[in-house]
Image (cartoon, rainbow, N blue to C red):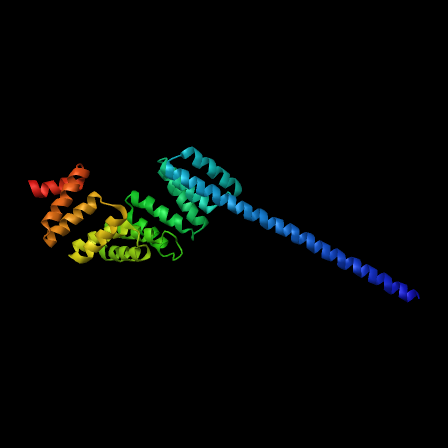
Amino acid sequence: MQNNKLLLSFKSVLICVLVSVFLLGCVSEQISGKGKKVEQDKGKALELHVQMALGYVEKGNRESARHHLTKAFEIDKSSAAATNAMAMLYQLEGELPLAEEQFKLAIKRDKNLTVAHNNYGIFLYNQKRYQEALSQFELAAADLAFINRSQALTNVGRTALKLNNKARAQSAFEHACILDRRNPDAFIELADINLQNQEYAEAKKNLDASVSLSGHSPRSLMIGIQLEKVFGNKDKEASLALILKNNFPYSKEYLEYKQKNFN
């Protein structure tokens, strides 16, 4: 009888222990779930503040951009995305040494932050540091998942032209056009190279693609004038020259056209 009591007592203790473990597990799971939710909310808030900051930088609203970056760094003081946005803000403000410092820091914090490589490349290009810029653009263009990869390739092409590497430039522009058939910058650059290479049919096709996407510019009109001259279409050539004169009378392209045709 005593043994039965001991057995029952042992079973009761065992049941209590198992229930306690189960309840502890439930509580731990709830705490863990809440922790994950908090982390997810922080991540979303950080991303929102960074995107808002970049939007204000694009609009030239420095105060609002800085406000959102302050909030972003309060969430994560070592955020690479926020650091990249801060570099953009410093660039807007003309604080170039600080901008470069922040670009480098963003890349150090996350070497896979492709947008930082592309933005730093633009910064370097504007400083005429073309070889360094090309390295950054090539890194950005190598990221197959980069949403702006076509534009990164366009940047590669333009920088390669500055370094007199026409072959790399042409291949970059061609790749950019394949990735995004709505990239007028890549098409106009490719048309210009085609013209120089005497690939006139290709030049006309790529020029038309660019104009259909973004309309005429002084550069597109000048390329068009040269192509129509090659094809012997004097009426079309004159029509384009008139548009250039009427719409862009102070452009370097019109001044060049005048010097060649009226002097």
